[in-house]
Amino acid sequence: MKLSTRLTQIAKQIPAGSRLADIGSDHGLLPVYAVRQGLVTQAIAGEVNKGPLDAAQRQVDEAGLGHVIEPRLGNGLAVLQPGEVDVVTIAGMGGALIVTILSEGIAKLAGVSRLILQPNVGEEFVRRWLLEQGWYLSSEQILEEDGRTYEILTADRREDAKQQNQQLYRTRVLEGADELSVSLSETELVQFGPYLLEEANPIFCDKWQQEIAKLEKVKASVERSDNDESRLKAAALQQQIKLVKEVLACLPKDKP
Image (cartoon, rainbow, N blue to C red; front, side):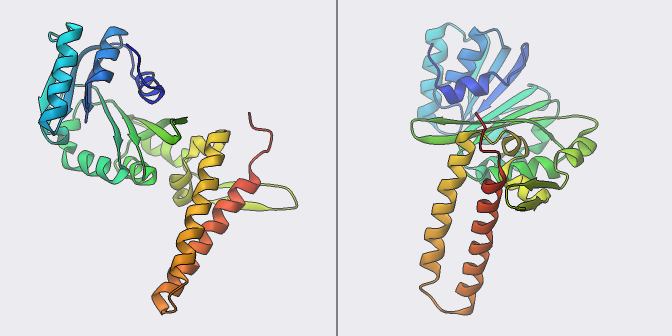
C-alpha cells in the first residue's frame, strides 16, 4: 500500500500498540496502513458521509482486516464510546472544523492519550484549543506535497501539561542582523507554531512569504474603501504584515 507523504507522516506519530480512531477517514487508507505496519491493534474509521464510508469498508474488506478495523457512520467523535481508543487522528479539514469536532465530542476523548491533527488551514485555532484544554503540543511537522503545505500537530495528555505548555509558549525574542529583534508572545507562538518557528525550515519560510503576499492583497482591497472600519482593518493587516516580515528577517539564513 502506497500512502501519500502527508498520511505517512501522520502514521509516524502513532505509537505502536495503539487503538486508533481515524475521524474523517475517507477511504480508510490510514487505518489499513497502520494495522499492516503493526502500529495499531484495532481501529475505527469514522465517516459522516455514506459514500466515503462504503469506500472505507471496501478498502478494509479487500485488505482482509474486517476483524480489527470497523468503519462507522457518524458525525465526528459521535462514532466513539469513551475509552474505546487511545489515539485519535483528524486530518484534511479546516482547523475551525477540527476544533468543533473536538469540542462537541470532548466527552468521547476519555482515555485518549494522543491527538494527531492535520488542519488544512487555521492551524492557530487548533493550537489554541489544545492549549486551553490542557493538551501538551509535543511535536509539529510541516511538509509540502503536490503544491500544498500541510502542518501536523501532535498533542499528548500529560499530568504536567500546564507547566510544559508554559515553557513551550514562553515569550521568545528573535534577534536578526542590524540590531533587528522581535518579541513573540504566546499569541504569536500559537500563530506560527513553537516547534516550526524553532526549526524554521525552507517550507515554513515559503509558507509565510506566501502569507505576506495574501495579506498585502487583502490590505490593498480593504484600502479601496475610506470608511473608519476599513482604515482600522487595513492598519491591523499592516501590523500583521510587519510582524511576519520581522520574524522572517530574524530567522537564520543558513537553515537546511
